[in-house]
Amino acid sequence: MRMFLLTALVLLATSPTASAQPKPEGAYAKRWPLALSAERAGAYRVELDRSVYATTAWPDLRDVNVLDAQGKPVAAALFGPEQPTALPARRIVVPWFPLPTPAPGAGEPSSVSAQFGEHGRIVRIEASGGAPAADTGRAFLVDLSGIRDNPEALEITWDPGEPREARFRVEGSHDLQTWDVMESRVTLMELQRGTQRLLHDEAPIRAGFRYVRFVPLDAAAALPIREIRVRLDAVHLQQTVAWSELQGRRVSEQGIDGFVYRSDGRYPIALVDLAMDDFAVGEWTLESRDADDTPWRLRAGPWVAYRVDGDSPSASPDQPLSSGAVRDREWRLRSRGPLPDQAPTLRLGYRPEVMVFLAQGTPPYALVAGSAAARRASVPMPELVDALRRDRGEDWQPAPAYLSPAAALAGDAALVPPPTPRDWKAWLLWGLLLLGAVLVAAFAFSLLRSRPAA
Image (cartoon, rainbow, N blue to C red; front, top):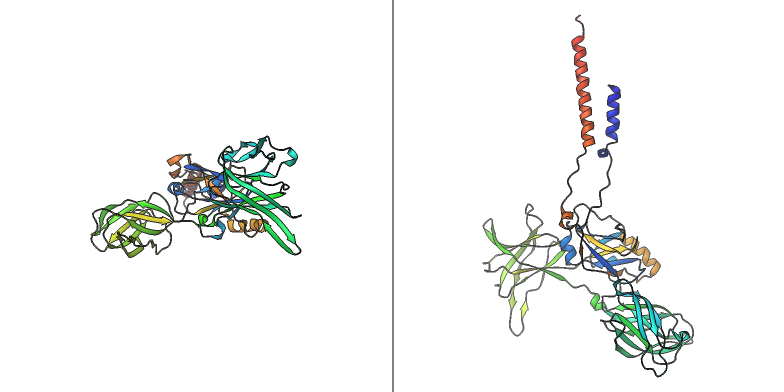
């Protein structure tokens, strides 16, 4: 009997219920391939869009993650748009290629053909005609196909040394075949006299072109270019408020009439506004909750909403939520006065958040979302970004990455919580222990019955 109990206890101690089990990674509903603006940037930032917020299953977005080409998660963390770690980069290193210089009096440079890689990025340049190979490099091509933000200028870094001055015509193209002149004359120079130094190393460009070509206008020697960076438009980088417009229905709860709205995603709502062509001036309050079984909480108001037409139309300003940003799914609008016949359109404003991730594993990368089982691992991303910044310069920021169209993975099935697994081994062991206790009790009772009378 003693041996039986010892065996049962050993099996119980080694049961899966007695030790922590690793959680399965689980399937995701959708994936978004990521287009990187630059190679070997170390870290990237991707701005979430409406489709990601509409797919996630959790209020804290724990199921939004970044995977490499092998399906393994990389170090990633979610940040608000105003946090220093997630601020957009102002300058990004872009690839460039030397081109043969056109012959004197030829007018146009040699024709250019290219071998393209992923997302239209140039892998190799081939040019026909032009000057001999020894003169290659006076003309050069800059690849901006990985940039989706508005560029402002190209900053060219070359090896310092002897004074130099070179003049170029700057052209832009979408397909490397048709070229438009962006700047008819740009001068790049480096002059020095004693301790004074004059440097002009940038060329203004316009947005809307994937490739930029510098055509020499003089016989100056080729620039010993070390690096070319694109400077992005600071005004364009300022993040604007995105709006989600909801249509409501009239309800009556506890004798009070109002309008109820249902959000389709986990947006970090911070502003509210009403939109309706002829809604009456009224004093409104806004409440929200995450589910039907949770209480309503006051989020904004009371505030007076109005719209005045005429020569100088005006409207009430956007109202910030008193509680800060919330991701609730249900919203209720109430008025102290009579309700209009038609429910006003409820506009909920938010600033998209940013996912910052490290370039680990095997590219290409993809953002995934929508899982009832998966959870993003916690990583000290601010410390990791600071370490990269110490190596790459104080003004360095994670390079932008962009969401490509989503592709379905497991779909809605990934949003269903998995059933709780039954540990039959544990039940069996407990049954054996109970059976052993019954046998011990029966053995003791039989000993008492068989004891002879005094």
